[in-house]
Length: 435
Image (cartoon, one colour):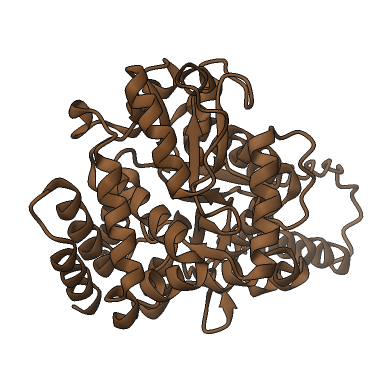
């Protein structure tokens, strides 16, 4: 406004001078050079996440670079610890105060909980333009949607139902290969125990107990039973003889763990396998990062296979980012760019090689990935077609957090209390699922 007024006044003065017939020359004053246009301000994109370990932090930095290349300013909001629980506490506090971040790392049914509160923005414009419905398995895409619209962008796929092993420990015990059934596993475990090593490395924490339990249920009952019992929470499935068998199998596993397992972190448990002190471990593919960090390669320093009985099924854990409703057009553009970057082949490849997971995009080229990741990708695609692709209840993908937590408590009580009967455990799981 000031510039226009000054220019207008100058034009009026010049006109009046000419009209008055002044004969004297007026010295011309050079016009000032126009000021350089200010550079457009970068949109600040605040991203809440809990990727704080070495490989995860490196991957977050890659996403930061991609977003900054599109003209946005990345504002890191990393919250360490608690497997994401600490981050969710901080996020809720921010949201309640009316100051949510641009995007936040949230997964599973919690996505729908935020959507129900009316706080999430649709990213359908990106999803439709880039054909996410064709890129993603339906069971994964459905988790990312609320009322039919995409409100979250998936980052990766972790396979939870993995079994890891030390080949030298197996060889010393006379175990010829990775067991494919639970009966074969117990035969192998007996041999390892007899050889003087720990058969099953396990960290006695509730989430680790639950991780093993879901693999047992999947291996004993199959994907359809798992889906009925631990996703739909069908009372008949939970009370069935199949669940009884799964609980008996789960309890039998405890006899192959060591006395010092209580409270041990998962990575210290993986270190037992790496160091040749234990034969097997049941853990998601994030454990692979520990093996590779120790300089080991699949098929040489360590072995990987689906947990017994689960070769044709796949429990998935998918990291994802939700986008909050924001009024600023620049922030909305940044959210769209962030969503697009997350699903890009470039980011999918770099991130998942660091994380130990696999790309969530179907048909992604796996040439640069290791043999365990290639097996995971093959099984991911096959199980998506066969119906064997199921969400992990132990890692927040299957049911709402309150029910999952209650069932987890019932499972870990059963693991830790040898006097608790299988029948009572089934009853407690059923109560947790209902209440």
